[in-house]
Image 1 (cartoon, rainbow over the protein chains, first blue to last red):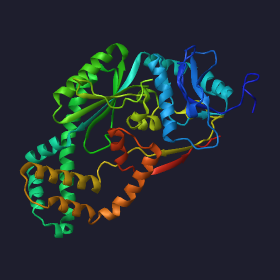
Image 2 (image 1 turned 90 degrees about the horizontal axis):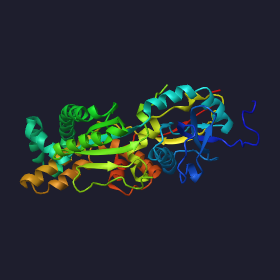
Image 3 (image 1 turned 180 degrees about the vertical axis):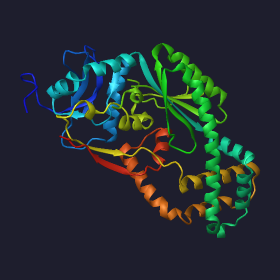
Image 4 (image 1 turned 135 degrees about the vertical axis):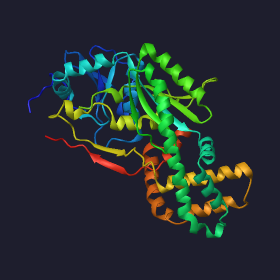
Length: 258
Length: 148
């Protein structure tokens, strides 16, 4: 392989965190994987890759590695830089390869994505039912659940095994009732938050009692508006739904996948 | 840096805020880090470095017998708090927990949960712990191979 390296440039494999604008000044104190220094690789085009040396001799993916990946990207974000995050685990053979392969051929393409995302951040809204409140609600509104629950309560402990499947059935009915509520409640939350955002991605909530998990792309000058809308939602639903707003995050959900 | 601020609720706010940068909030973003973002293979091919990546599958099975039993237990507990009926119900509920098909499902899930905890370390805040308890399906060890 011909060497794309500049004279004297070392051949250490590079871990790639993301891409930012060329000429960006990196925050001084940001540390990468294994606390290695984070630097930019530039090719004279519009984009610069955010890299550090790749730790050798071990697999990546420990908690500290994931934290480092996120820490580097968030440091750029906090410094007001536009940053396109790479998915965890991107590595190229050396700085020359980053320049020649990642930057040279893709500068315009990546530059366009940066233009679209400039001045915008990702905010993630997670909403979860207050379990006792929604269970009470289900007990009151779903006769089948109330009846089965009442019946199971009367079963003595020594024959509990005999009604195991009834317990499962009770839980299943509750889960189904929660699903129906989630469909409606999730939509209400989404529609209330979305107008202040440029775009959103709705994810499949992880747990049965989760109402909504959605990421929003929000312009810097509308963040206050967005956060106020979320705050208003929080107040309106405080009895039965807890909201959690995560971010600002690099726009993981809004970079092209291919 | 935003520091370790996963949980903070200001005086009047009903919305919990999670930071993007603090390590304690990793649970909030781990799926993004592992599943979203630009994929290097699309931009560079020849010089990819094949590295082994240890990750957990962060997606969680939504509906399971365990979830159902948890709900059943929670709703039973509700009743107790409400009308104070049926003495000895807690024992009854515990009995349910130990019985039947649980033995088939719980073992595997617990094993996965332990490994998840190992990888993510002991989160100190409530949310992390909450996330840790969720049954991760499996831990996959993926190899990213140089495809050239």
